[in-house]
Length: 127
Image (tube, rainbow, N blue to C red; front, side, top):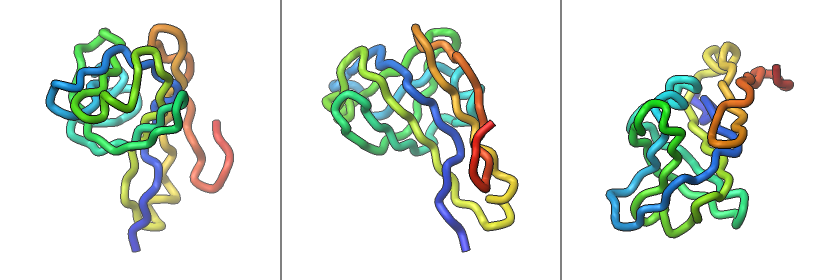
């Protein structure tokens, strides 16, 4: 049996642009993608901490070092520049894979810089 579980997360990133006329997706700085293990075209769930909106989209690669978190297309209507987001990527894992899964979580600070990298343990707790 496969279960849908957290693979990686970007916690409290700030929206840098909202482009409703652009092809839909979320554009994320390539350095952030590499740091947490997300990839271009991965599906992600996004939670807006200002208004409670939750939606799914897919990832575009942003310029490395740009610190960009840009919502494009229809999703751009659900955010405002400066909103804090939680971006969650999931994976389907067997119980054996789950036991070894330690999701990477980027805790973001000012200017979309990584303040801390932490991992969730599969059987509770975080380190």
